[in-house]
Length: 198
Image (cartoon, rainbow, N blue to C red; front, side, top):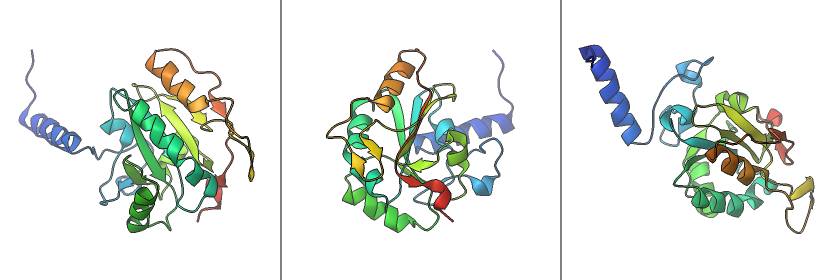
């Protein structure tokens, strides 16, 4: 069994400490350190790296998107249902939404999920997200296995069913946890376009 050199040992010790705090500041491929998403405390975070070995579920939301807000109970329910087997993250892609505004939003909608500000859209690009609310599910190895709507509750903006009849996000999480392929790998979402954000 080989022993790490002192420099490597310090890096490992630092990584363990950061993971113990729930954050691992590492560089997402194709981005610079300054473009990484941030926690509400201003710490750079890669949710995939800090959740290594777990299924990761990212939910892209905005404080001012009515459809996104209507999904809050569903998002919270799913996070509680799978909390022992998957790591959930709320991702706010709007640069105009301050950490203070997001904290109020978390409180208002009773979220108990860690939140990230993705103002440079590093996670938006990685998850191929275009809408809020939209979700992305990554396998334990960090592979994107599903992205798109949470379910089919909304048929169009302002037009919803009494209740959803398909549950794409829940199915994708369950399939990924069980080591099964997810089909479809993408389902178009209805909501507020991320491309409209400046």
